[in-house]
Length: 430
Image (cartoon, rainbow, N blue to C red; front, side, top):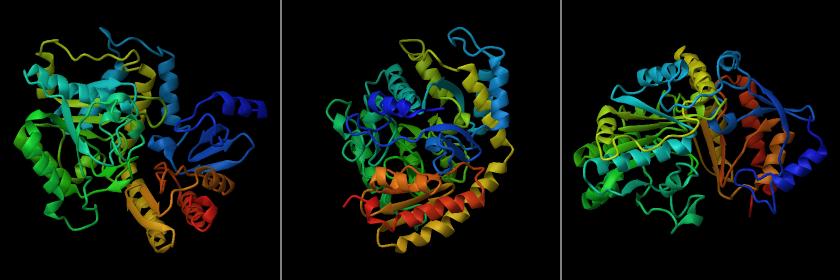
């Protein structure tokens, strides 16, 4: 159990994500979790609306994943992947190759989503190097977010993202406006004009286009039209560019399709996966590529891909991922996500009429309320905890990404708390 002294130590010495050490935000002590609930040290239970940053799609303490990790622990917790392989890695890569587009044949396992993006960027650069072309830049979308490591930050929005502080220190890439045609609107061909014009000018300097398909996540929770993604794929084919799809947040059913690229029926050349890959149990990511990309890199000057994380293909993480993917293979997630989507639409879309709300949008198991003013995180977080829910807003966005196993009663509690929070001006920065 945690003591007041523990929390004082935490506040004084432990740096939490996106938090000041001089003015830290309150932290709530979680001592256990089960199903869709987080259990606080004082005995209160919170319905989790975040899936632990979108990863715990099957909830917490899932017996199948628990058992898979426990079984693997009896054999080995880790072994280096250089010159060695093991059953869990082989099974996981076999599953990933089977469930992703058939053109994606080769799998590189790494530590986290951000590292998967680093791997994808390095693959794109090394691909062109192996072809004898010095292409150092990528093209991406404004309002995009791809992770916190340096390479990943370089393809986040340089002006409006949380990484704008590092502008001038990072490699400079090409940016175009985020797609302006929403997922639920009629397609407008003009939506692709800026990207097409940019590529006509600078495509010979580019190694790849990287984007989050259909849903731009931490950069604004924006949902854009599938036709835009189709047009991007066609332009990449026209100019011979690689297309990198960052599905770290959207992969494994979150948008109502197993992968968001399926909304547009396209396949990328490089696919980044993470977050829900292990069901939120252990950190692991996968970058999948076509045989052509893998062979070109492998036949280049280095003779191999120059990357190798120490904990690559960690057996415990692979075991958790295999159990998580087995649960998805049962197909139950489709009914679960469909049920969540209907309830989110009924509960959140009417909030667009609230004076504090600029927009509402729902896709799959993602529900977003965009407010006119930024939220006061400390105040609104306290309100949510007092009302028995865990919702972590950012900027002007209050959103829900619950575990797929959530009950209608639990989701109703999340929606009700979110709705009630809008009524208090203290929850917003004026």
